[in-house]
Length: 201
Image (cartoon, rainbow, N blue to C red; front, top):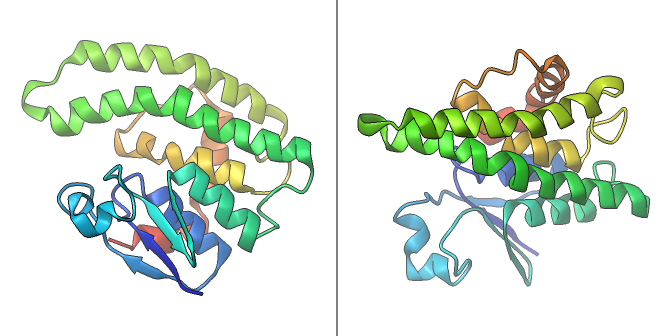
């Protein structure tokens, strides 16, 4: 069975490139950029949304980074995927939380800083920065008495949330008010699998 992942590290696909490096299986990487590459007929047959990443694992085709990561870790790296129903639900909870509470706000800032460079709307940045403080406070409090989201060890929950929050680094977001988040992302971002994934462009 062959496994193929589509995407490049300088995009949201970094989350799933990180995941497949964490699980340690052999795979083929198809460097697919989010502009023209993802709109070809060949790629649209894999992901009709025209977005990256996408995964083909044998007969299974998946899109959406959170789904890809949950699948990869459950199938190939059980140490990263919770064993109990409750912990599995929490991993899904945090994954959905990241893309609903954090990602929309940080993307507003990304758009202004990188796509509207010549006409930045500072009010959009200020609004997004203010709105994201509440979920950041929730995450910081949750990490007050644990090293990782589900306890003492790195799991797919950390991979997914920290993967989403990689954009915080790109936009130089000030997390100094959230020391628990800073310590946690520091632990997550030191992982060798992420460094290997970041080289895939």
